Length: 155
Image (cartoon, rainbow, N blue to C red; front, top):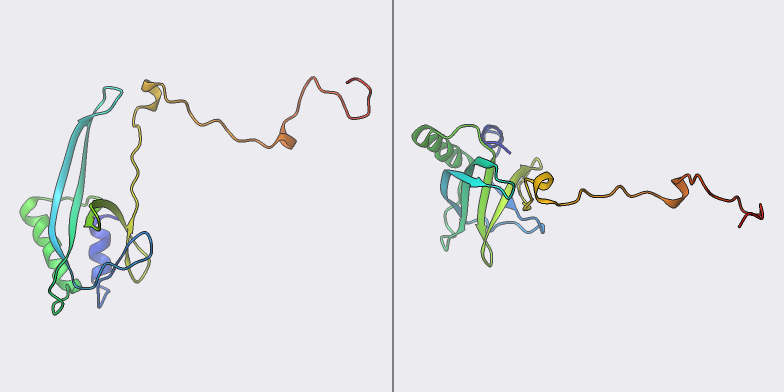
């Protein structure tokens, strides 16, 4: 989800809820403690220099049960961050700590913002010898050229 998409959703909501990949909700007394831009400048295993940028939200469970983050407040924080930090319409990455800090993608199901799992990947499979996955085929679909028909006596 990009910043423009969350901003649009926030204008239509009365409350904000984030749902973890296992279906649990982040406690409703969470705070968004940071909105920023993270730049990752790196070299992949094939030697290609890469540059990635994401908008980053950090969620934090506060012991403050009396205050809730309302959609208009988060929208104001996002717009301030865009203006002051020069954040473009980037993909959003969410940091949330359960046992350790996890990084999640973000989606929306019409009611809740969904924290989606992220995976690592090799970005240079063609250069570092990682075989491509072989296509899976059913034996019944394979047409053998040198085969004997059942009952033909050739086997």
